[in-house]
Image 1 (cartoon, protein in one colour):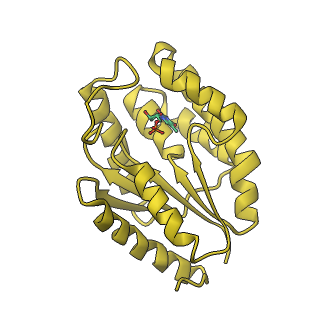
Image 2: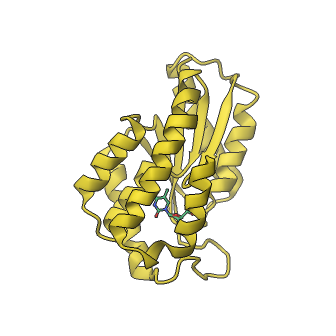
Length: 206
Ligand code: TMP
């Protein structure tokens, strides 16, 4: 089986991390190697940038913010993701390139062309095989306080519009799931789709 790249996208706190863990636990019994990473982060450099970005994101200009996300992404791809895919691993990513299109281009107005060009450079053109959009309200059930100051409901609506646009551009890559469903129901839908892809790719899902 060749390497497989699966990404989760959506507004903050819709349950991406929980779903990624459920899928990782299941896949570990199905395939030889599963690698899980999050963006921004996943490398020593990326985790340092994550700290700065989650604390101060909107305090810096939108372009500077995007380039910092992209720097973390380039390092993660070069040192972790691309080598894992070359070993034929299944790589599960908590956010990826589409977060920058949704949050920085649609959310904060960075030119779409710039985001897409830099994304392509940072990833060396490797696109996800499957992207799961957990569509739902920001903050899930939690207290509703945003970690990054200055992000308004209007901002999150623009981010959501970005995800909608992306999923319409490449419907074969995207699976859109209602994040308000029971996590077990969401997981079953993900599992069915991933099984299909594994079969297409010549994997051996039991
Ligand atoms: P999370 O990993 O807990 O979802 O938090 C990451 C935050 O960073 C979230 O608010 C989305 C934001 N983000 C961007 O704005 N652009 C990006 O490219 C990435 C990867 C994340």
